[in-house]
Image (cartoon, rainbow, N blue to C red):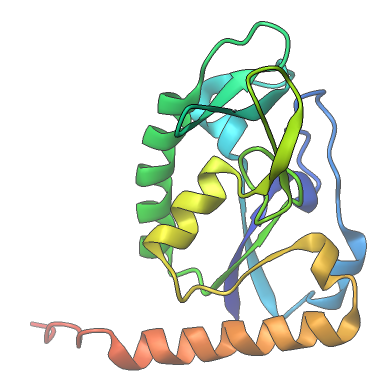
Length: 179
């Protein structure tokens, strides 16, 4: 069975800022019996809690910061520190792909709004956790759930996950001999 990480809200866990979820039944049903899911919510797992103040990405100078929407409390370091350890744990867990929540300040991949210091949308980019994931594992198949709504795209992604898994298992060092 393929081990694929997924944004926990898409798995149906109530981890969103408002205590809700965004369960993706179509995706979960399509891959039932094929995928072992590894739910991850960077915001809840890094200690922001649920429910919590929503956060957004704000560019200040050359730096992108994760700030509370109203309080402007900064959680950038908290997220970056969490991401390093959690990504290492996902590698150890043997994931072969990751399905991420579109437009999320932690999980979006190219769809997350980036704001300027005055609160205007500047452009879109990737969430802090997703950016760290792609930087650490550039060959790992990643997709946002919205892109997997199309059955052809879903099947193509699953094939990329299978290829990643095959490559990972054929290049892993041999296990030490048993005694």
